Image 1 (cartoon, rainbow, N blue to C red):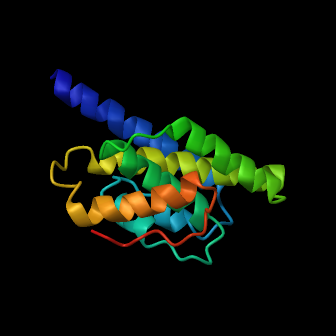
Image 2 (cartoon, one colour):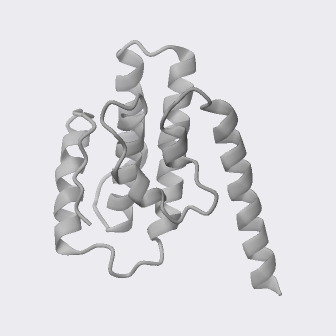
Length: 151
């Protein structure tokens, strides 16, 4: 019974997060990509976000941070997030845009982490090489939306 209660609480939390995202990102095309009722395909959708999408950078940097954390890369995820958000603010984004960027980053990070958490074979050689390449770019301050599509 406790497991059922935990599942219901998790579904309720996910529904609240999706509702918050839906109200905070109504004009963004990434909304359909990251808003996902069950989170099952969030990792795939984050991987396939179009580079011209206004939220491609936060989606892909959050995606890479979640994957790198899961695969045991040694880096500071909070510092990566702070540096990314500082770069976005410095690029001249308005407070409203910054709020959308921050929400997209955090939602993607959390959703991807939940999606891949039980996949013991996720961190294969090809995938960790792709993660390493993107993570190194992001840690160097290059947030170009071109994350590797390694599976």
